[in-house]
Image (cartoon, rainbow, N blue to C red; front, side, top):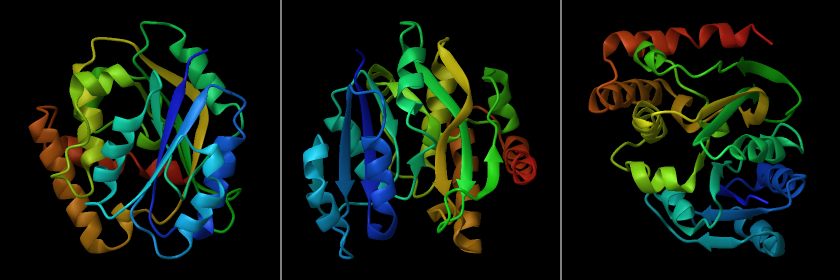
Length: 249
C-alpha cells in the first residue's frame, strides 16, 4: 500500500488543531504518516500535540523563519512516496480523501493530484463560504492566472527532489511559485479529482489586511515573471477568477 506523508505546520492554533489531528487520524487510508512542525507555540498548541504524539510520525517545535521554512523542514522529514500539506486550521473534507488520492497515484505516471477546496467558517466548518472548483489541468491556463488550490495538492516526493522546495524569499506567495514551477515543468501526470478534498477555515495569512493583499499580489507577479508564465494579465485574471467561487456550490 502506498504511504502518504501529511505535513502540518502549526503556530498558536490550539483552538482549531484538534479538528486537524482528528481529520488525519480518521482517514481510512492506513498507510500514512503525520508530521507536525510547530513554530514554538505558546498558547497550548504544543501541549495538545504532545498529548497526541503517539499518532504522529514526527513532532518538531522550535522557532523558525515562518511557514515556508517549516513546510520545507516537514517535507525533508517525509518518508512517504506521496506528500500532502494540511495546515493546523484546516481539515479533510471526509475520511476517504487519502484513499482517493492513493488510488489516483496507483497509476505510476501520475505525479500530481489535486481537487476542490471549500472555505468554511472558523467556528462552523460545516458552513461553506466559498467553493473553489478547480477544474481539469491544462498547462496553457497557467498564463491566464489559473492554479489548483494549494491545500489540495499532493505531489510525489520525487517531484520535490526534482523541482525543489518552497522558495523562502517569498513571504506569502511561495506556494504559488512552487505550483508554477512544478506545473509548468511537468510533462504529464497531473490528475484532477472533481470532489472536495479540504475544508479551509477563512482568515488565512494572505488576506488578513489590505497590506497583506497588496504584498500577495506583488509576490504573485514576481512568481509569474520568475517562472516565465505570464505577467500583469495573468495576475488580473487570477484575482478575477476568484469571484465566482463565492456563488458556486
